[in-house]
Image (cartoon, rainbow, N blue to C red; front, side, top):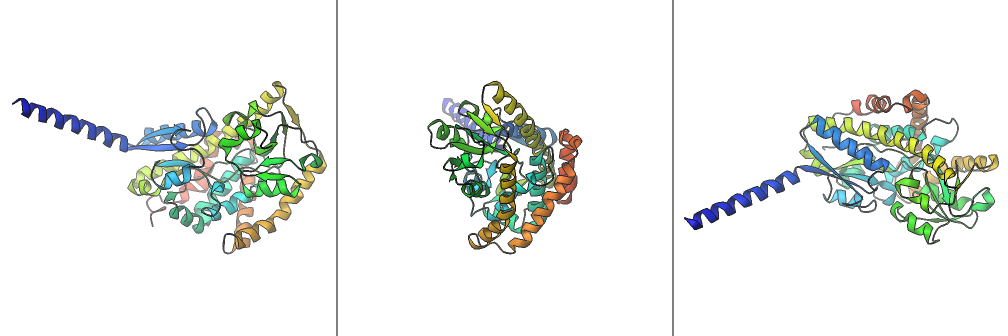
Length: 383
């Protein structure tokens, strides 16, 4: 009888253990390679809350613990996470089609200026990848991932340990670049581009490995760069970082979801794009003001520097077309560039009204109406 009770207790314990494991397995794991409290981590926490409130899914976010930024694409592919914050420029060959669009991000800060260029570029990338680029979706499938849009940063500035006031000051500097177009900007004006992940910028600046980082102002706090920055030059190189999949889903996980659950994911993704884009916009303004208060010099570049930078962007279109054709083997690149360029102008028009970019719900609705509502969750990324 004692043996029977012992076996029964063991079986019960095993059953409870298996149930706990099953419950844990049923919780979707979200990897974001930014620290807790960052705009991206907060955005994905809100994403998780929305999914849980509107479906039977459970979601847990792991800020800077499950996978770092460099590890996320392969980790998501291999199922270490169910959802991940993917930065496509870290893997230029694997995401070449998507990176073509991201490489054109400097267009969003040339010509007509809009109050939230990141919100405009996020819309252009979302519409391009999901509605106009089957090749983009195919390359995500090869990585065992499903694309649900990507937020974009505010305009790129120079965070430096030495002041950059003129183009002459750029020459000879070692400048961190997170994407190929920004690297070409640095080299065009006589600097040396240094390609390192965002998580490594702090150490590189503190140890003098780089003189500047081309990155958006929110990263002063998101990546704690306020502590190692002495000078900030605004509006150059310009452009935004648009090479992201802020809520890419492991494809095996996606295929297990019902159409109703996928629709909730679409809704959450639209809100996520608005949350991160506008959080970045608000945080950029606050960080610049805080930097001034801390004694960091904030420099407005001279007109000739801005003019030269805009001329570079226009001339770089041919370089981008040649590079993505010859180096990555993309087809019909000029036509794709024309499509992306037109979408950038379209979304600049859609977001030029400050009322849209001051209202998260209005911006999320814009993403929904223009893109997500036109995609069938029952069939998207299932073939």
